[in-house]
Picture 1 (tube, rainbow, N blue to C red):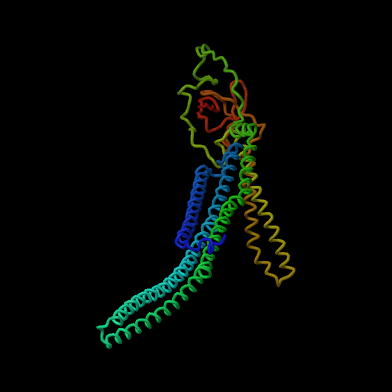
Picture 2 (picture 1 turned 30 degrees about the vertical axis):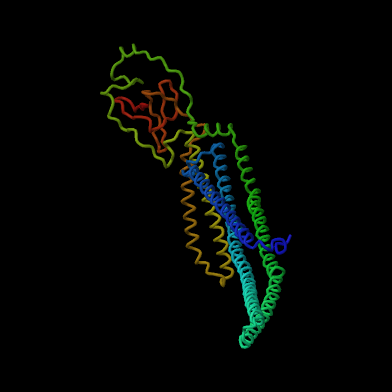
Length: 458
């Protein structure tokens, strides 16, 4: 239905309606703006949450448990999910909110132009009506004056006492009034005809066209709202596949939790390699009654037969992992050897590449000076020797998995068989004859008067 024909007399209401339409569009734009601000805040809070719970420790301190690794995977997926929320906010701001605000400004300008055209047409019609109305009123006044002149003339013409000059004067006045009335009539007729013509054009041409423009503008506004409603949903729909992958990643991380593997890691992390303690031997204190102070026994030496402590407990060295139990030390040393071996292989590869380049330079001198590579080759060879030496040092310190350790309890007295050679372990023998290695950092060494020495576990 056309506004120009159906609503020809509703200019003010159409003015209000089109203003309401723009207000509604801007209200929706404000809704989108608040919606994207929520997305921005949500994404920021998610990223802060991920940052808060992400590990901040060094790589060596990272837990290897599947439950922890799965949780960190979930945090990574959640961080990606937050990124998609930022994408939603960005596209809403550009494709929906920004587009709505630009379109709103265009609508305001277009509406202002159409309403100005309508008011201008109405003002012109009002002006035509005013001219017609003025000519009508003038015609009415002239007719009344002519009627008065006619009455005055008739009265004097029928009055026997009236002089001829008075009658002629009244007749002349009547003629003037009648002539003026005829002119006013013609003017009124012309203005009326002009007004009727302008009024027909106003309500059949100008106003329908202006209202049609307003209708087209309002319908385009409605279409734009529908498009932005769709865009609002499309922004969400476009990120759904990626968000689904994030959620699938979380599910995959959840499935990767392995309680058996985590239990094995606990064993691997804390296994010392020591054997469980054996039975406590019977200690016959009555034998001490028949012993002399100079006897070389396995009992606790007397003060007079013991020199001052030769080695006290000190902070263990971390470089060779001597502070660790055998099993943990072996694993750490093996990891160190593997790392050094990788570095050595890199140096070997670099040396081979430099030698090949040197051969090429020797065969084709125009490509480069072979001697220019010699300093780099020498440096690489030096690095290789250092790495081999370091690997050998760690291999020497690497305890065998079958190497025995000796179980001890507090205040045990043991005989030294082999002193610590720098690996953190001392070979000793119990009274029962059992031999094995004990951690040097756990013992106190003292010299007996008539014996080679003993180690006391503290």
